[in-house]
Structures are given as structure tokens and as C-alpha cells.
Length: 254
Length: 352
Image (cartoon, rainbow over all chains, first blue to last red; front, side, top):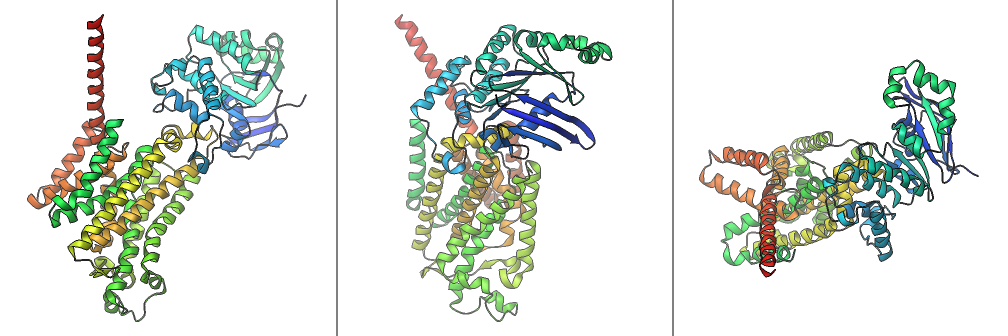
């Protein structure tokens, strides 16, 4: 099977600080890939490189057969990579419905936006997506007045309505209640029926419950890959989490 | 919503009927204020909707005005060199003045030049993701450059005095009351047209994109939009409005000078929108009219005090009504709706 995403030897150098030092990663269709690792391991930076927010100093990022390493962000989105940010990033002064409308898969060029009108079919899709994230009844509310968890869901819903082929989620369950976390976890594998998902997560209970494949990062490199059970047995991982950084890892619950 | 639409109709009907109930002097003032209102609509579009604070709209206004004034000056000179050029020792009309003998060229340039300048400035800055206060400062720097240039090139621009002493437009005397009334109507019609057009833009899909850019530009980018294109578009559009306003201004006032396009007028333009409510197009129009009426009333009656009073008014608005006059109206309307709903609920309770 061809991978959706291939990162080859990706290096990011922030003025001498090497946030990523040669990362290789392959993600396959319908996969949910968890990225874990201590703070500063480069997980968010890797997502930033994939979606074009940060430029790779070296190495290549391939999306199917396209080299997207140097493409501008909006083009990367248009070819099918959606990104959910760590803190909910929605439009507070637009309604929930209008937020979804902007995210709806459409021609994003100025001249077509000037005449844009939603079709009945698109409206149904949006309503279905809102139903899914439990915000259909809130659609006329300003997005800024939603609860934190609802904002997180709205942002995820806005990514899914674009029907991406690769979805990047950065700590999506931060600030969610236990019930909301559980729903999100179950929902993750449903999302994977339509696209590949890369998810950065700190909550180890959550990772243990909902992960199949886990990639452990440390100091800008991939340490190992495998199931959660496998990586927990890995000597290097134990070293990073339990050895030198006993206290740090205790805090992150591994 | 229906009420609001009626309000708009009433407002513009009152404007069109103004020649029948205002004195010649008051009408000429109102005509001038309507030009400013056109600028304010553009400011509301870029600042209130898109979050771009421009301190440089005096230049776009000024360029539009100068383009029109060059035509008027050439028509007034009747084939001779304009008077100020002779005084500066210029023998022949400079090449770039020649096309302005045609009114259509002058009108086209009054719109095109500000638009192009704004497009160039905004493209270079927004493409490099320069925004916020840095953009405001850059736009203000453009004002300084142009004012200096226009004062310095006295033989081409009339220097500090600017361009004045016009006589006719399309052969009609500018001093005749009828011409002035027609020009007033033209200004009111242009304002109405620009208002309707901008309202359509902002209530449609584009308006949502603009608000989204204002509140979370990065999120917009990561939804697959290129914010630069949108920002350059609205910024240039608002400069075009300012250019049109400048052309209409010079026709009615009969004078344009560098002082009228400088830093202070540029800031005043922003303040009209702020006082009226920058998030509301109608608010910005009302703001421009109210502020300038207050300014002329205060300067007629209390010439020593008016600047202080004007300053006090700004402070009050900024501190207590940050959403401006439109904000006051909206909160009153919200209270009324709430009361109405309250009554309905009571009525329903009575029935049960």
C-alpha cells in the first residue's frame, strides 16, 4: 500500500536550535498514528512542517507523490491536508454555521467567493457534520460563546468537512471533560474510515486506550514505532521516560 | 431586519431631498460631508471588517482629488498654461498633465491611481505578512512621502497652495447653484451605490472571510484561503472609494492642497469610522456626517474651543462607547427585542 505521507530525513533548524534532526515517518491510508514524546521532542514542529507552517531546513515531505516541502500553506490544505491547532482556533464572531460554511470544501479563490452560494446538498452535509459533533442545535450561536470542548469539536468538524486525506490533530482532547474525551476517542477511528490521522497527545491513558500505531519522538528524532505495548517495552523509550527523566515522565503518566 | 431596511431608505431619501430644505451654504457643507462618508465606508470595510488599520487614506483621497483638479485647472486655463506653472517659470505643459485635458481620463485616473498605489503597498506588505501596527505606520509613511513630494514639486502641483481657481466642469459654471445641486445629487448617488455594493459584499460569503481574517488569519490560511489576495482586494477597493470621494470633493469645494491629504486628515478619517462604529457601514456614514457637522458647528461658534471639544468627544467614544454610535443603536435595539419577547412570554403565560 502506498503511504499517504512520507517524511524523509526532515530537519528543522531554528537559528542553530535543531528542533527536528532528520525525521522519517510514513503514514498509510486509514491509519490513526499517535505521536508521543516528552515536551520539546518536536511533535508539534513536525505537524507544522507537514502543513507548511514551518519550513523544513532539509529533507522532503511527500503527500502521495507530491512534494509539498516548499508549497504555501493554503495550497497544502487544498490538496488535502487539514490541521487542527492545539488551542481551539475558530472564528469567535461568526456563528457555528458560518464557521462551518467557511470550512466547507469549495473554491477558495476570490472571484468564486464573491458569488458563492451553498447548494442544498452542501447544506445537508454541513448539517450532518454538525449533528455528528453535537452542535446542530447551537448552529446560530456565536462560536466564541461555546464551551472549550465544543470549540475543540467545532474545529475538528471544520477540518472533517473539508474531506481531507490527512488530518493533523494537535492535542485535540486538551480541556475536554471525561465524557467528551471518550466520545472523541471513539470518533477517531470513525474519522480514519475517510482519512489518515496523525494525532499528538500527552494523555497516556487516552493513547493507551485508542492507539494502534504509536511513534515515539525524542529530541527531534523518531525513537521507535509500534503498538503501545511494544514501545513501552523498548529500552530506549524506558530510558527516555523512566531513566534520565524519571520525574518528567512520571508527570506525563507513562 | 425589515426595520433596518426602511431606515436605509429613509436616510437616503432624506439625503436626496436635502436641496429642498437646506440653504445653499448648508447643502454645500453636506455635499462635502457625503464625500467624507464615502471614505468612511471604505475605512469600515478594511478596519471594522478586515482588521486593517490604515492611516494613509488621505493620500488616496488626495490623489483622486488632484486628478480631478488637474482637469478642472486645464479647463479653467483655456488652452494656456495653468497660472501657478507660469509663476514657477514652466514654459510648456508637462507630459503627464496633457492627458488630463480629457475629463474621462481624469475620472478614470482618479479611481485607478489610488487603487494601484494601494494594491502595490498592500501587496508588498501583506505578502510578507507585515500587519497590525507595522502596516499602519507604513501607510502613514506613504502620506509623509506624498505630502512632501506634492509640496516640493511646486511647478507641477501648485505646492502648498494646491490647485484652485476653477471655473467650469463639462462647460457648466461651477459657481452656479444648479451645478452645485447636480454635483450634490451625484455625490449622494455615488454614496448610495457604494453603500449598497459594500453591503452586498459584506453580507455575502466574502464578508465572512473578511471577519475570519480579522479574528484568526492563521486559521483562514489553514482552511485553504490565501488571505493576502483578500486583504489586497479590500484595501485597494477602499482606496478606490477614497479616490472617488476626492474627485467629488474637489468638484464641490473647488480646492485641493497637500494639507487636505496629510497625516491629520488621514487620522480624522479613521476617527469618523470609530465614532460611528467601525463594524457598521451605516455607522461609519453617520459618523462622518455627525463628526463633520459637529466640527463645523463648533468651529463656527467656538473657534477657540472646538479642537478641545472634538478631542473630548473622541475620548468619550473610545472610553465609553467603543462600538460607536452604531453600537449604541444596536444595544438599544437588543433591549427592545428582549422586552418584546418578555411581553410575548407574559402574554403566553396569561393564556395558559
